[in-house]
Image 1: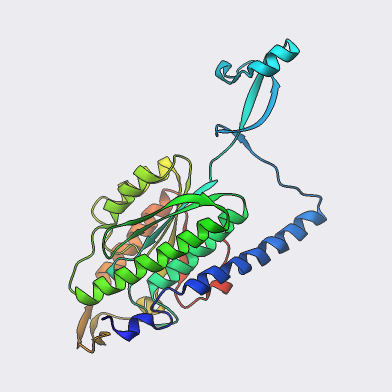
Image 2: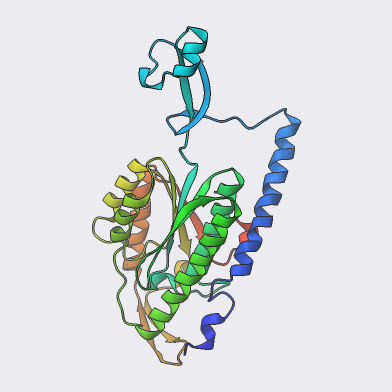
Length: 296
């Protein structure tokens, strides 16, 4: 039987709240559409190397002969080629870090809960723009995968996966509080294997316990996909000095936790190096409600 605190607001992932974020994204979309309409704007599909045919046109020098459209060529007597819809960024893979360093918080919500909220916003925006969304969660037990799909049903599956994986991570942490988290780098290499080339991959993590070669793993994933990071931070991290601090767990166990600046310094150095490699990173304060979040 689990402890009641695991169901407390800010500790558990609220499925209804994540589903409601759809309305927030809709209001953003409506506002942007009205602004665009004032300038005569309209949505255009990008040409590219995807699988969806965008149109058929006359063959030009430099075109790939493998894309010749036989029917149009036979009908007109002039070589025609097919052009394709660019599928880059149309598939979004959300990666939720629910390892033990994410399962705490001192303000509005746990880091892990804020991560689920922010990823849900990204997912709702992606399907609103006609894309597909999938999920990979890490931490707790085995990674959970939700295949990429489109429309509302995709986000229902993603949000269900977030809630299921987060609950498993909380229960696992409650029963094994001394377990060390597995390195983040291992899961990023796993993500590279499942993410389609050219997809958008968004990781929500505090970047704790990255592993010795995490920077390399991120670079490889960024080369394979359009990769970005939502960096979850709790306000106390920036204000707490080195020392031993009292704590109490959900089971009532009390003790002292040693806090040193070394881990935060290493994390800051990793973030700086990633930014120098032009990896998009956005800082997320866990005290910030989803309604106040900027668009990624």
